[in-house]
Length: 245
Image 1 (cartoon, rainbow, N blue to C red):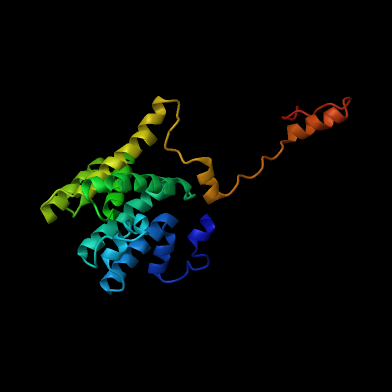
Image 2: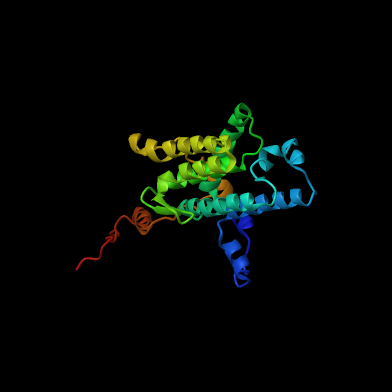
């Protein structure tokens, strides 16, 4: 399934924009594509935000719409592709673990959205990923607008403060995203060392098989073959694993 989603084979020699696009990890690539497509379709009056929200596919499209084409959209797309990409790349080559994180965070946000009357959850999910990345990189130094230099764990709060300045209100979606991000970070990074390395949020085996396929059968070792030959020929000595000198 991962090969079907990734695509881009044989296209890496194209334009720089095309190369940049296909260098993105699969989940980040398709999420950013869906977000831009939703905004373009709304801007061209092909669909409306009403259709994205009041429909049976709302469970998915609520995470794609960040608003009409504007500087605010570019602001969200920049942070989405940057920190989603960094987090996905750090989770390994397989999209199984990162997609499980997206599924968990999306489900939790869908459960709490009615409480705070949140229609679209793209910004909340993006804030979740930014928070998780910032906590996983506590010593990374960042600069915001070239004016403010701080360590990565302060990034979600800097962005929250910037939103308050720009819009005049505390963004509920970003606050919920931070809360969901902390829940994931706690059970994925703090909880396991205290409980023999076990995390309740690890993806189940069937989810990993969905993306990576069935694990290859274990190969028999040379010693196992030698032991089997010895059972058939008891008088023959079993060779040592390390040659004698």
